[in-house]
Length: 502
Image (cartoon, rainbow, N blue to C red; front, side, top):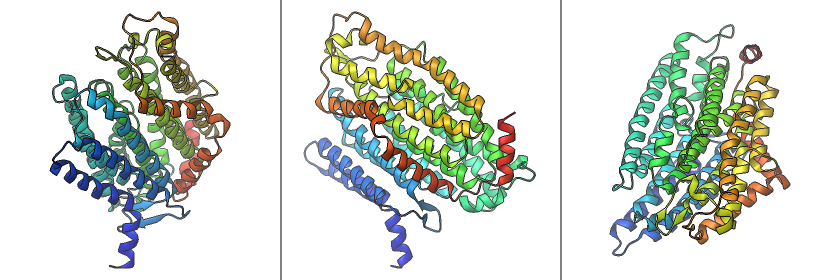
């Protein structure tokens, strides 16, 4: 084997471990004489932990390429992979007891999540349109299956079908945009595409803009940004709650990561053509997330609209198109993943003797019957609303500050207003738990693993302000690694600033 090939293998080792490990676990589950679900679950968590360690082991400040520059590894990819693999592992741990209670425990579940994480890792390190599409499809095909894993439930089957049909539509849009971009640039590599997409007098040719718009539409679907959010509420509500918890965290991290890489690396000079699109979908996502969630009675559906709104807040930092903006998005997504997984640990514990419950009104009087669960959920709701000194406040503070530094004052003001409106439905949950009288049927105690996870994530959310420096420093390093190779042409920067201040 050549030295170059060995270097390529080392760079892709986290994904290779996950893929080969998933195949091994599949053999264990298929040929085991006894039910191997627990063994496969523990093995999957171990694989994800090992992959996260391998990804974190890349400590070089330089950017390394593999497989003819179709795969890239840098500090940005390292951090986002650690977050994504970690979120996937937590989702598997959270789901075990729930799936057993609902008689949905199958060894294939964890294997599908590992394969999905493999696709996410490929997405995060993609430096080529072909490797990007391969990663997206590997992730998505596994997600379509787990969304409909409850075959006896009409809602779950409907959720899987909706996700599949709309996902196929988004893949078609992404492929069409990629084909146009390849036609104009003559390459699928992001670095070479950047050389072809050069604005003249601050303007990009309309034909290139069309290809760029279709590509962005496909990527916006992956993060549930408006107007490509239509699948999110139905899939979140219809899929099993453990699957929804996974959907709300890991795929969002990977989707935002590849969105950042594609636009900053492949179209850094053409920012004048896409910055306004990012601003538009950011405002639309924040507005829809703030207002559409107000009337929701199902907490999973409410969390779907909450996710849409939070993707809008993250895009505020993205719209700044600067190292500080990218760093703020990374920090925001990391904090969002922690808050969301902690919230779903509580939602998975919403259960009575008659079975699981999903209505917000079923939380009435929870502070009197299950004070620990109510306390954790209240703190997480305050954080999601962006109330200081919770972690969510600092996430919004950093993205708004990055936008203001870039001259996007109107966007920052709209973000603050949307945050104020969105605080209503988070505080409504707190009010229901602490001020409404408890119902006759009491919520069962939180399972041990869910109480531990909820407690740890609540403590992180509550005490983040005490020592935020390590995560902020990691986000800054990752943002610098992504933007140092992105040549934001001065003409494009000046044009974008002139547009943003109109």
